[in-house]
Image (cartoon, rainbow, N blue to C red; front, side):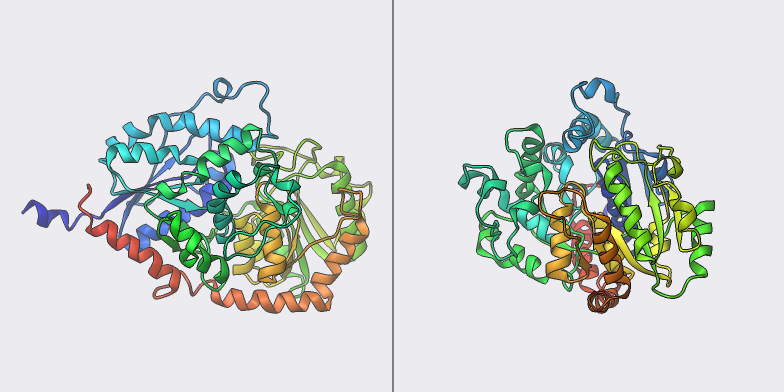
Length: 481
């Protein structure tokens, strides 16, 4: 009789994102799908330092999706004074490690869920789950190509004595497109520093997962997905079962007064005529680069919406940990007269704009993006071609793939000896994407993927079936409530 009653109780799983909007958003979307489409109860475990103002609006709960905030961490005690925002991953990992000290008691209090899904920088959770006999799954918040590189990195680390950026040839990940050394993510450019040690610690634990969810789909990354599943190297690691479940992207946002004004402005523009410029939740430019970008936009004479953030010369990830809290006045740092000269053609918004709503508007015809994986998927899903402007983390690898492999983006060239993209190059890129022949080619390609994107996670699509197979296993495993 007890067993019969249990069949009516929805299986309970926990989902644990690490710090940052780029991790919170896709894991929240996964949680929603498990609840709405696969009959699960989900506890979303939130690291309470992972709660910028902009993120709080996303944590809307339903009867079967509830938010559990881990006990707060005193960041000042965890982070020593010599670690600043330049070392984004080190800071993130230290905060996360301290937050996860409470994970065991939280999971026990929840009745030991049938599974835990976490992401790449919270793999300490694997140890807790092993102790409690809870299967632990990893959710990769970036591309399949990046996941293949991460799985290959321990082999690369043992075989190569010099720094990877000093290698004379691109890195050949088995079965995948080679990775140029100049496109390598920041965290693997110096193996002597903590950034690399933390990154290596987490990716070396990938084989401990019961399975790996990838925020991608078959039509987007066929080569990388085939390599991870079939190439002898990855089979020998051994690589856990891989489940492409994407695209998992934000479906809607709460619109602010500023967002409504943006959409009303877009309503008055011709179809596919506006370039949307934004560099993610944490991205910033130097004053010099921001000035050149402004002049390039003005020279192009193309319509644009620019969600502009106060510049900083410290790091491209300058707003990662205080996203949503900064205040700025664009008049203080944009070129003198820029706002008045571009009035009517361009719309400048301080700090934030609703990316989902703007990308989904028919007047939006291009996206100048930092190439974070969430933003890349949102752009593709809405059929908007990109100008790739990577800043930090794995964004250069994403940009190279989007330009050369997927064919949905172009990338500006930097003159030899310079690190700044000049205004003439910005002008050329913007005109190319919005009005040029190459722009028409990538627009056609991204429209094809726009058709494919919603089919994959829809009922009977490849990503739906992939997630459904795991959900069925969780429902049948007699591992807890």
